[in-house]
Image 1: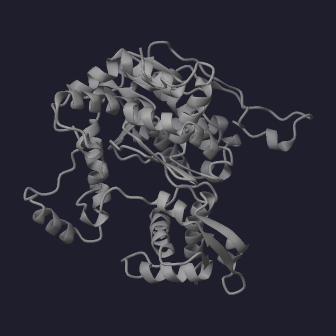
Image 2: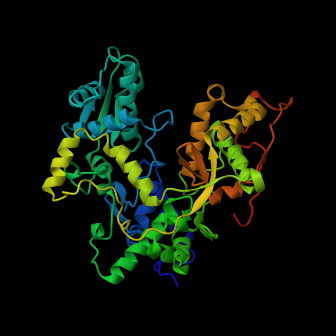
Image 3: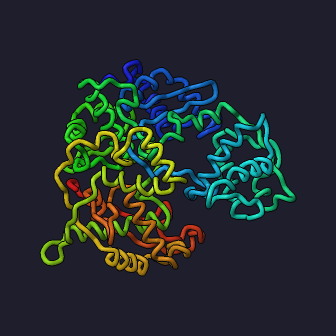
Length: 478
């Protein structure tokens, strides 16, 4: 029997699980973020949350009078939870750089700061970074800087006392904004557990059992693997058995995993032949919904249906199968791309040599030195095949797609494939994509365009609105 939530009565279990989902969805909770009731909810269950989140997942919950901060144990590099701009678009590298420099600059100010003064401080630091800079005379730079400030404002680290950031971004000569600084929230936002200047690779930000202070004993290793397995299921659309090493595979198959996660989150664990998934049909925990509304999501859904149908074909129409990159290979490739942007590869190499890493920098994740599982092959669809299917989709349903994406099919295809990859439905490889087992869920997808009637206002005539008629059928054994 699971020992999760031992101190919670059956009548209060649903409320406790709501608090768990809240803090997992929002690792930083303040008096106003994500809403005004969230902090009270977390603080009510703080002691039980600290116990369960550490025992089940290896996460630390740190609470203060005005904040609750979940310090996650990271096993991989995750690109699916980006910071978002005021318009809801993911931050680019410039915005991330401005956000970090803004945090640094705020540490040198008192209780308040004017937006123009803060911009000048960030600009003074940015100019020393090759390829960055911040020219307050350029509207794109001002917009990117204000997006970083708005991200901090949403979380309460900054509070607008007077003026308007939007007006300043439009014309800094005529407008200004004044902010109050909350240092407690600033500390919660940026509280690194490592000295960043000493890192030789982005993979050094990832955690292992030793990073949590665990001993090297066999019992501790099993506990670490069990936590890692639960994190894998919790934080990914599906945990494929083919990606797991021998010890992790055993933990993924263990009955205790489902029991612990279901009691902790209130969601259902589903096991299939190829893997295990935590099913969140209501969106209470997921940060990325699929299927969903909007042109990209609906194009991705219809594309998934066509890929799934192609996978079912046999004979001379059967798709070629190729091996998928392992989890370690995907991590290594992503780490190489990130590490290539380090400001001085020579400095990193010197640090590595001083640290005794004479064999050069490595990109292996914690635990990846274990024996790799046998090669698994998946159906392969080419880029040209995907472009052809998207043309068919656009021809049939394009009248309801957003005009900018309908007119730029390459961008629409790229975004649709990125979404499918984020949902573990495909794996993108050179020249195309591999169809992963979960995509079989969408083999029976059908869609129809809603037509305008006299009773419908124009806003309801777009294809694939949130209430669009999309019928999906799931095969019970994908």
